[in-house]
View 1 (cartoon, helix red, strand yellow):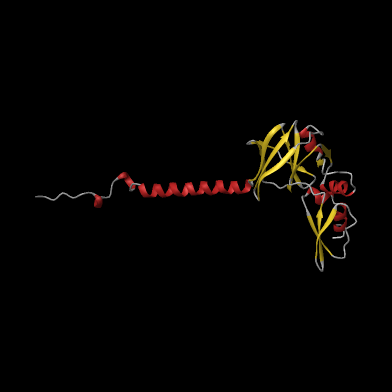
View 2: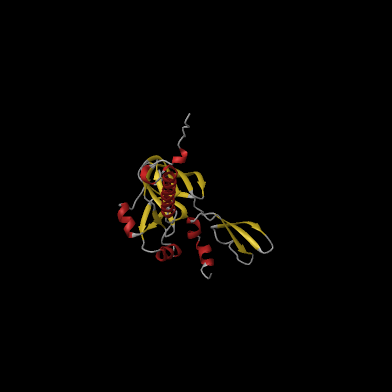
Length: 220
């Protein structure tokens, strides 16, 4: 795409998405850009390390109200939004959060899997954590086992408010539609089992037992 060279040179979008390495054709020259360092060179391609790459999970000290992913992208491309210290959320979410300024803190990844991410955080006061994974319906977050809300952050990422102290934040993928189908399937299975039990133990019509099954007494 035409905008791809601009995204690479601008560097902010790649950094907030935890993109550490960029592979470019050999004719592209980025040696003069301080954000990149050439680490490997082949006949046709060059690999550059993004020196500004942000961690998988990190904290920001300020939330900015920006409506729409397109406007967030413009803010990043124009260097108005600095993802290393700022995060963009919708005006509605900012009103729900109720604060713009947060205390920076420590965020570390304890475990990472496609459907489950565990972070450990340490904040002196209330903080805001950004996880550089895609925001998508079906993801749920909890702080020390207590459900908390996930906010669409920087247009495409996940963010959450974290209380002061040391805590564990867990992100788990639990799509509601799958659980709904599972519930329906279990209900249908229970219905089938009940029907089978009734068929097996059902008495003949009239409540009389089958005469052929009763013991016979022979006359002496």
